[in-house]
Length: 325
Image (cartoon, rainbow, N blue to C red; front, top):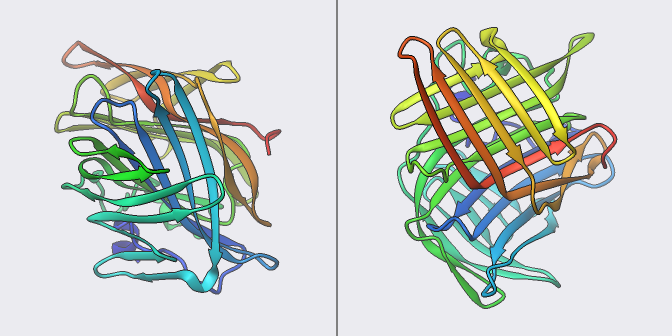
């Protein structure tokens, strides 16, 4: 069990459990940060509509340099979902996702996405017996409604996707892979991710969410920041602190602190697209996600008394409250 949890890319569930969802999030960013495509293969198991799917969200800069976001959801029969654990391979219809590449053949009325993008060496997060993945000790509690996993904070890319006949080259770009599985997404949460900062070796993941637990609930958070070869973790399970200030419906400011560091994150959504998220009844909740959002970070190291600042305009951001969907 620990080995499976520690290798987050593996299929964590089975096809008999209902309600249940499981999804993989493969993000590709071009070298200049202007072309971004995230692909979300997965399954949704419910009493009324069990199926597999590949969802996509794209932020594309056109020849006029204007940014546009496009999304779509392509459903497949549940028997189109096929996987193997070692080596990991996920197939949904003609689409193949592994630890080394994504081979995509997606077509609907709005878009055709075809091509192959290969991945360089992954940057996994640090883990231990007590913290087998980003969820920490909570990874061992089967009653969690949603479990998160990070496969790679950062990796290089080679290859391209053709979108409606136009080539989008991801060679020398940046990749990121994360996971979710469980019964439903949280009723409210904030999610921020980017590995395309001014410093090429910086990558960030943050999530704060309403978490039902036993007969109560709490606001839990996890944050992983990598700068160069160093990883900085802030988390509820480490008894760290998190103050989240919702500046507007599309922007937040977050203050994190642990024994050795303080981190401030400012995030702003600029051009979101609509995605479909899981509920206990199936893929029925509409959420908004940004791929080209603005994020600024300030990391203060207490012992060293140093301040590191960085920013990006290629961040993934979701700000979801319980009234949405």
